[in-house]
Image (cartoon, rainbow, N blue to C red; front, side, top):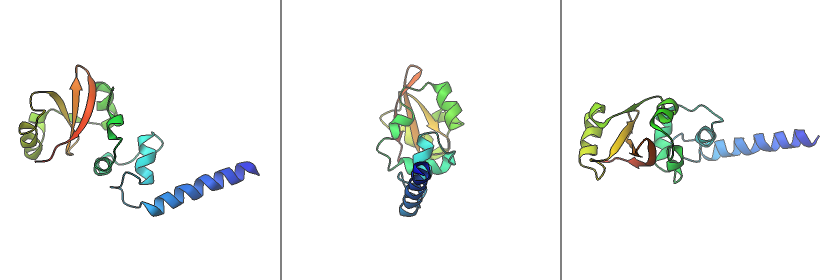
Length: 125
């Protein structure tokens, strides 16, 4: 009986959060929260929008190697291989002389020191 109530409470909590934060661009959205904990496979392009408001977004990349991030994020690009907007944004940024990769087709730069990521930066022009 206790297991039933525990499962019911978990379901009710998840449903409440889903109703309270329905936008996939909200970092409190249940899909994004579960995805960060590797409990749900969220569309990564949609997750890029939620990362804007996520104060803990650096934890997604910090300490990981380029190979680990390539596997987790499916594809990373060097700034010269990115679209014109990201290329221009990178060239005008304070990180233009650092080792960075662009995340997918989104506005995010992963900053590296050696082989490990040290931060995640939103690139806006």
